[in-house]
Image (cartoon, rainbow, N blue to C red; front, side):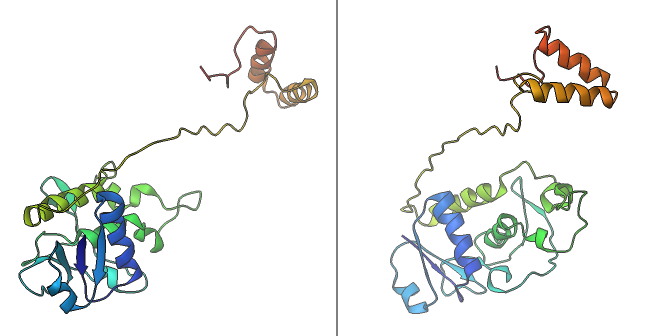
Length: 224
Protein backbone atom coordinates (compact mmCIF):
# COMPACT_ATOMS: atom_id res chain seq x y z
CA UNK A 1 0.00 0.00 0.00
CA UNK A 2 1.43 3.35 -1.10
CA UNK A 3 0.73 6.30 1.18
CA UNK A 4 0.46 9.70 -0.50
CA UNK A 5 0.75 12.77 1.68
CA UNK A 6 -0.55 16.09 0.44
CA UNK A 7 -1.51 19.35 2.09
CA UNK A 8 -5.05 19.28 0.69
CA UNK A 9 -7.23 16.49 -0.70
CA UNK A 10 -9.47 17.79 -3.49
CA UNK A 11 -11.66 16.03 -6.07
CA UNK A 12 -9.06 16.86 -8.72
CA UNK A 13 -6.30 15.34 -6.61
CA UNK A 14 -8.28 12.16 -5.80
CA UNK A 15 -9.36 11.65 -9.41
CA UNK A 16 -5.84 12.04 -10.80
CA UNK A 17 -4.12 9.85 -8.24
CA UNK A 18 -6.67 7.07 -8.65
CA UNK A 19 -6.37 7.28 -12.42
CA UNK A 20 -2.56 7.15 -12.43
CA UNK A 21 -1.91 4.71 -9.61
CA UNK A 22 -5.02 2.52 -9.38
CA UNK A 23 -6.25 2.33 -12.97
CA UNK A 24 -3.00 2.63 -14.94
CA UNK A 25 -0.32 1.24 -12.64
CA UNK A 26 -2.41 -1.10 -10.51
CA UNK A 27 -0.89 0.22 -7.27
CA UNK A 28 -3.03 0.39 -4.12
CA UNK A 29 -2.95 3.84 -2.54
CA UNK A 30 -4.22 5.78 0.45
CA UNK A 31 -4.15 9.53 1.09
CA UNK A 32 -3.36 11.56 4.17
CA UNK A 33 -3.01 15.20 5.15
CA UNK A 34 -1.65 14.36 8.61
CA UNK A 35 2.10 14.62 9.03
CA UNK A 36 2.10 12.19 11.96
CA UNK A 37 0.41 9.49 9.88
CA UNK A 38 2.97 9.97 7.15
CA UNK A 39 5.90 9.72 9.56
CA UNK A 40 4.50 6.58 11.25
CA UNK A 41 3.92 4.79 7.95
CA UNK A 42 6.62 2.15 7.41
CA UNK A 43 5.74 1.16 3.86
CA UNK A 44 6.23 3.00 0.54
CA UNK A 45 5.20 6.64 0.75
CA UNK A 46 5.49 9.83 -1.25
CA UNK A 47 4.80 13.49 -0.66
CA UNK A 48 2.94 15.55 -3.24
CA UNK A 49 3.01 19.12 -2.05
CA UNK A 50 5.04 22.33 -2.20
CA UNK A 51 7.69 21.25 0.29
CA UNK A 52 8.99 17.85 1.47
CA UNK A 53 8.46 16.80 5.08
CA UNK A 54 11.66 14.79 5.45
CA UNK A 55 14.02 13.10 3.05
CA UNK A 56 11.16 11.16 1.45
CA UNK A 57 10.18 10.55 -2.19
CA UNK A 58 8.90 14.01 -3.01
CA UNK A 59 7.13 15.46 -6.04
CA UNK A 60 6.73 19.21 -6.04
CA UNK A 61 3.13 20.03 -6.92
CA UNK A 62 1.71 22.53 -9.32
CA UNK A 63 -1.37 24.43 -8.09
CA UNK A 64 -3.68 22.89 -10.68
CA UNK A 65 -5.02 20.04 -8.52
CA UNK A 66 -5.73 22.31 -5.57
CA UNK A 67 -7.63 25.20 -7.13
CA UNK A 68 -11.17 25.69 -8.40
CA UNK A 69 -12.35 26.94 -11.74
CA UNK A 70 -10.74 27.04 -15.16
CA UNK A 71 -7.82 29.34 -15.85
CA UNK A 72 -5.82 30.06 -18.97
CA UNK A 73 -2.52 28.39 -18.08
CA UNK A 74 0.82 29.02 -19.69
CA UNK A 75 2.03 25.62 -20.89
CA UNK A 76 5.61 25.02 -21.97
CA UNK A 77 6.15 21.56 -23.40
CA UNK A 78 9.67 20.19 -22.94
CA UNK A 79 11.49 16.94 -23.55
CA UNK A 80 11.72 14.45 -20.68
CA UNK A 81 14.05 11.67 -21.76
CA UNK A 82 12.46 11.46 -25.19
CA UNK A 83 8.86 12.09 -24.10
CA UNK A 84 7.06 15.45 -24.18
CA UNK A 85 6.06 16.74 -20.75
CA UNK A 86 5.10 19.99 -19.03
CA UNK A 87 4.68 21.64 -15.62
CA UNK A 88 8.39 21.55 -14.78
CA UNK A 89 9.37 21.23 -11.14
CA UNK A 90 12.69 21.87 -9.43
CA UNK A 91 14.84 20.40 -6.70
CA UNK A 92 14.34 18.57 -4.42
CA UNK A 93 11.56 16.99 -6.51
CA UNK A 94 12.32 13.36 -7.39
CA UNK A 95 11.12 13.88 -10.97
CA UNK A 96 11.56 17.02 -13.08
CA UNK A 97 7.86 17.43 -13.95
CA UNK A 98 4.58 17.38 -12.09
CA UNK A 99 3.12 14.53 -14.10
CA UNK A 100 -0.04 14.50 -11.98
CA UNK A 101 -1.09 18.03 -12.89
CA UNK A 102 -0.06 17.39 -16.50
CA UNK A 103 -2.09 14.16 -16.53
CA UNK A 104 -5.13 15.96 -15.13
CA UNK A 105 -4.79 18.64 -17.79
CA UNK A 106 -4.85 16.07 -20.59
CA UNK A 107 -7.28 13.53 -19.11
CA UNK A 108 -9.98 16.12 -18.44
CA UNK A 109 -9.48 17.91 -21.77
CA UNK A 110 -8.91 21.04 -19.70
CA UNK A 111 -8.17 23.23 -22.72
CA UNK A 112 -11.60 22.50 -24.20
CA UNK A 113 -13.20 24.45 -21.33
CA UNK A 114 -11.24 27.56 -22.28
CA UNK A 115 -12.41 29.96 -25.03
CA UNK A 116 -11.56 28.62 -28.48
CA UNK A 117 -12.50 29.04 -32.13
CA UNK A 118 -15.01 26.28 -32.92
CA UNK A 119 -14.94 24.25 -36.11
CA UNK A 120 -17.86 24.12 -38.56
CA UNK A 121 -19.66 21.62 -36.30
CA UNK A 122 -19.21 23.68 -33.15
CA UNK A 123 -16.50 21.42 -31.76
CA UNK A 124 -13.04 21.96 -30.36
CA UNK A 125 -10.61 21.57 -33.31
CA UNK A 126 -8.09 18.81 -32.42
CA UNK A 127 -5.37 20.49 -34.47
CA UNK A 128 -5.47 23.35 -31.95
CA UNK A 129 -4.83 21.07 -28.98
CA UNK A 130 -1.59 21.17 -27.03
CA UNK A 131 -0.91 17.58 -28.09
CA UNK A 132 -1.28 18.37 -31.77
CA UNK A 133 0.65 21.65 -31.77
CA UNK A 134 3.51 19.93 -29.94
CA UNK A 135 3.42 16.76 -32.07
CA UNK A 136 2.51 14.18 -29.44
CA UNK A 137 -1.13 13.53 -30.30
CA UNK A 138 -0.15 9.95 -31.25
CA UNK A 139 1.56 9.21 -27.93
CA UNK A 140 -0.17 7.87 -24.78
CA UNK A 141 1.89 10.26 -22.72
CA UNK A 142 -0.10 9.86 -19.49
CA UNK A 143 0.66 6.13 -19.45
CA UNK A 144 4.29 6.74 -20.39
CA UNK A 145 4.68 9.25 -17.56
CA UNK A 146 3.00 6.89 -15.11
CA UNK A 147 5.28 3.94 -15.88
CA UNK A 148 8.36 6.16 -15.83
CA UNK A 149 7.29 7.39 -12.42
CA UNK A 150 6.80 3.78 -11.29
CA UNK A 151 10.37 2.96 -12.32
CA UNK A 152 11.66 5.86 -10.22
CA UNK A 153 9.48 4.84 -7.30
CA UNK A 154 10.69 1.23 -7.40
CA UNK A 155 14.28 2.43 -7.22
CA UNK A 156 13.40 3.86 -3.81
CA UNK A 157 10.81 1.25 -2.78
CA UNK A 158 11.51 -2.10 -4.51
CA UNK A 159 8.59 -3.71 -2.65
CA UNK A 160 5.96 -1.64 -4.47
CA UNK A 161 3.48 -4.03 -6.09
CA UNK A 162 2.05 -3.12 -9.49
CA UNK A 163 -0.70 -5.27 -10.96
CA UNK A 164 -0.63 -5.83 -14.69
CA UNK A 165 -3.67 -4.65 -16.58
CA UNK A 166 -5.72 -6.99 -18.74
CA UNK A 167 -7.44 -5.66 -21.81
CA UNK A 168 -10.29 -6.75 -24.02
CA UNK A 169 -12.02 -5.02 -26.85
CA UNK A 170 -15.30 -5.21 -28.70
CA UNK A 171 -15.48 -3.98 -32.28
CA UNK A 172 -18.65 -2.03 -32.99
CA UNK A 173 -19.71 -1.02 -36.50
CA UNK A 174 -22.38 1.66 -36.75
CA UNK A 175 -24.48 0.72 -39.78
CA UNK A 176 -27.11 3.33 -40.52
CA UNK A 177 -28.27 1.60 -43.67
CA UNK A 178 -27.29 -1.95 -44.58
CA UNK A 179 -27.70 -1.48 -48.35
CA UNK A 180 -27.87 1.49 -50.67
CA UNK A 181 -30.18 0.07 -53.34
CA UNK A 182 -30.78 -3.62 -52.59
CA UNK A 183 -33.35 -5.02 -50.14
CA UNK A 184 -35.23 -1.73 -49.93
CA UNK A 185 -38.67 -3.02 -50.86
CA UNK A 186 -40.59 -2.24 -54.09
CA UNK A 187 -42.19 1.03 -52.94
CA UNK A 188 -39.01 2.57 -51.52
CA UNK A 189 -37.00 1.39 -54.52
CA UNK A 190 -39.48 2.93 -56.98
CA UNK A 191 -39.62 6.16 -54.98
CA UNK A 192 -35.83 6.31 -54.96
CA UNK A 193 -35.68 5.76 -58.72
CA UNK A 194 -38.23 8.50 -59.39
CA UNK A 195 -36.38 10.88 -57.07
CA UNK A 196 -33.08 10.23 -58.85
CA UNK A 197 -34.71 10.77 -62.24
CA UNK A 198 -36.40 13.97 -61.06
CA UNK A 199 -33.10 15.24 -59.66
CA UNK A 200 -31.21 14.33 -62.85
CA UNK A 201 -28.95 12.01 -60.85
CA UNK A 202 -28.46 9.69 -63.79
CA UNK A 203 -25.30 8.11 -62.39
CA UNK A 204 -27.29 6.85 -59.42
CA UNK A 205 -30.01 5.62 -61.76
CA UNK A 206 -27.41 3.50 -63.59
CA UNK A 207 -25.97 2.25 -60.26
CA UNK A 208 -29.43 1.45 -58.93
CA UNK A 209 -30.56 -0.52 -61.97
CA UNK A 210 -27.23 -2.34 -62.17
CA UNK A 211 -27.71 -3.55 -58.59
CA UNK A 212 -31.33 -4.55 -59.27
CA UNK A 213 -30.25 -6.53 -62.34
CA UNK A 214 -27.39 -8.06 -60.27
CA UNK A 215 -24.84 -6.73 -62.73
CA UNK A 216 -23.03 -4.95 -59.90
CA UNK A 217 -22.81 -5.41 -56.16
CA UNK A 218 -24.56 -2.94 -53.89
CA UNK A 219 -22.01 -0.20 -52.99
CA UNK A 220 -22.73 -0.69 -49.27
CA UNK A 221 -22.16 -4.45 -49.45
CA UNK A 222 -18.61 -4.52 -48.15
CA UNK A 223 -19.26 -6.90 -45.26
CA UNK A 224 -16.77 -9.49 -46.50
